[in-house]
Amino acid sequence: MAQWYQLQQLESKYLEQVDQLYDDSFPMEIRQYLSQWIENHDWELVATNDSLATVRFHDLLAQLDDQYSRFALENNFLLQHNIRKIKRNLQVHFQEDPIQMAMIICNCLKEEQKILATAKKTEDNVGNTQNNVMVEKQKELDNKVKDIKNRVQETEQKIKSLEDLQDEHDFKYKTLQSREHEANGTTQADIKREEMIIRNMFLELNMKREEVVCKIAEALNMAEQTQCSLISDELVEWKRRQQIACIGGPPNACLDQLQTWFTTVAESLQQVRQQLKKLEELEQKYTYENDPITQKKNYLEERALYLFRNLIISSFVVERQPCMPTHPQRPLVLKTGVQFTVKLRLLVKLQELNYQLRVKASFDKDVSEKNTLKGFRKFNILGTNTKVMNMEESTNGSLAAEFRHLQLKEQKTAGNRTNEGPLIVTEELHSISFETQLCQPGLVVDLETTSLPLVVISNVSQLPSGWASILWY
Image (cartoon, rainbow, N blue to C red):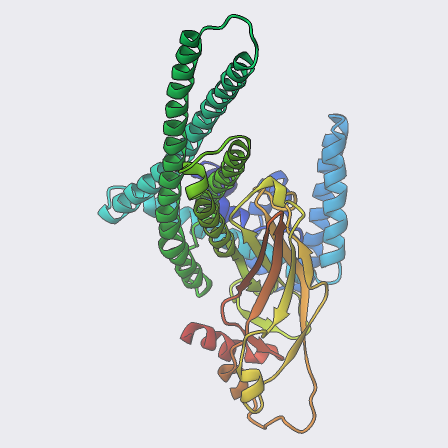
């Protein structure tokens, strides 16, 4: 059975891992359209032979031309456009270095095989107790997140009911006032009866206000507990798995489930904030002594804002650690003058944040050794070091920013370098920081996240010692 066909039969969590293997330099569309042709060649051999790599590169372009012709017969203009764009990109990236293309294809095929092997092993161990515990834990968390959403929706209905009752109370109260000032034959008994009705409505109104305030407080309690589990447990565990995956461990689980949880809680908190604004409007129209809204509104607003701010800050993560496309098996080792990629994601995927967050990359922003350790090298980031987060560039629609064309250049500072040679590569650990700012009415939040510790080399011969530093860390 063809390898690509087997991959497409896997669960979504494995398909997300496949998605991580491909980017604009070698898009997944090529793997899809030319799957049989790709799997019929020995790319490990091609990657060691420059002449053969050149032949295979031109063969691939010819295959794309054939695919273009098929789309032309089908009058599929969009796919024709995509094929032309893919072909141009391939020529830009690999025309002068077809060996690199062969290495990328070879690596992708090997990683696909690892994913298939992992999926098979997981299926074989489906009855494993640890997996069952993890599944139950995820189900429990999933239920908690859904419960928060449902509670907030129920509160929405109760606020509408409260608003209707308040309008009716206001109407009856004003009608009674007008009757008292008109000599239209209204008896004192009628007035007393109306006053009793209005009094009973007021008691019901007060009770509904207390109920709504309590419901919002309960929803915030649940959100805080769930948020704590997401940030302190689930996100920390994902980061640990990511670090292990970077040094050759099992492929890291995708972020989609975490994103769903984070986003649902954030949407609920935003809805609570809107509900509190509605209660403020109702309070402005009518309030009284010991009004539950007046007594609890400010506290609930501050709490909802604190929880939302904390969730947003924690949701800014490095989805894909810095890595040179030429050495996909050695992430976190970067060579000066060679392009590398890194991808950020905001786990709170809100539509209003699309194209609103401009991320800036900085090198060694919080590394104190650059100022205290003699001989510690300093680097500048070359290329576009700012990127706007959006939902269009990622194939899975996540709110992300991917830096694809960054390079490092060492700062030449005379008189303070030592002659330690390659040892300095082993001793130095650097990092890349990413900053952005969320601005909404009444809310400004500074977001920052940092890559895992990385090593910078200036010569390929330093790669083994640099990789050893990553493994050791």
